[in-house]
Amino acid sequence: MAKIIDNRIRIKQKTRTFQMRVAGLAFRNGHVLVHRAVHEKFWTFPGGRAEVGEASAETLKREMMEELGLDAKVDRLLWSVETFFHYEGRDWHEFGLYYLMHLPDTLAFHQSDIIHRIQDGKNALEFKWARATSDALKKLDIPPYFIADEIDNLPQTARHLVWDDGNLDDK
Image (cartoon, rainbow, N blue to C red; front, side):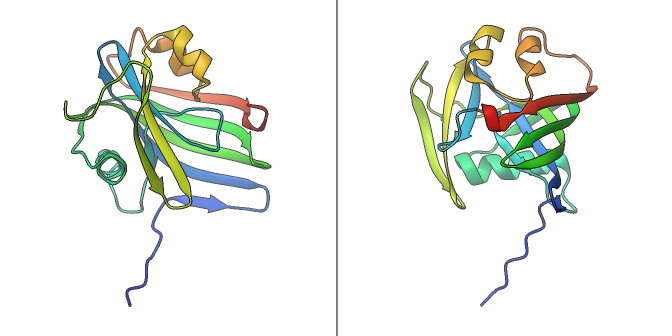
């Protein structure tokens, strides 16, 4: 029997956690792809934790293959973000890399319905296309929250930010 080793980058202390996450923004017909664990109220951009020894673009490709069964084309880095937030009784420090990505047209599109569901470990995930507007993303409560304000004007060169998203336990 093979032993499964978790190489995902996460450091847990008593009340604090650090992790490295890589996510992608994929667009179609004026919409952007989002996902969430069904037990959560907030949505996020699809991606996942990086693994030790894995380039960040490879993390995003791996996550899209695991969650959507699709080969993603990773384009330019949009943001590197040190995000601080409180979630599930812990203080989190997340280093996130957000890329522009392209997904094959074989991925279903609907303007409002859930287009894909998958069981990812203990979490059931659902994916949908959301209007790629500031107002629509703010209504969906998508951290890190600065992205909603920049969705209409993505950076042409990567930007680095330090961002405090506050308390996600209240979301």
